[in-house]
Length: 145
Image (cartoon, rainbow, N blue to C red):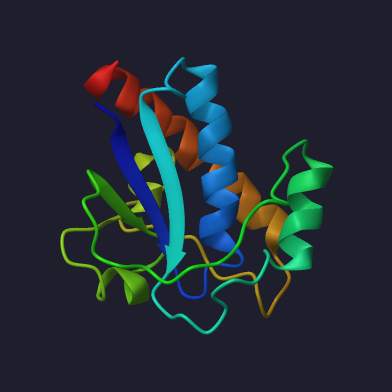
């Protein structure tokens, strides 16, 4: 049985697809790639079918990740085992979800992944995503590993 995770932000072109790409790598590093499936989605559907924001792609590529296959989609309440929102605004739209940064042991309680779309803080966001993805991979290794 595959454990299903969905990472959610507003438009699914910056934060959640970055987190999806990073989490897949972290899960592979922990030997969980075959046991955990990772998707990302946006609470809004206006970018559906579009690739990741070019700045997010460049940031990922500069750090050794490949996000070129990503195409945005709108979140639907599917049969996920874990739904993680990037911030409280999106969390309010998702029943039963948690904040992604809860899995970063160094993050303060209630910490969010800020939207880099307007201020260009993609490197800062990637650092947050990597820490939370590592913590989540460790949690899942203990939980289902």
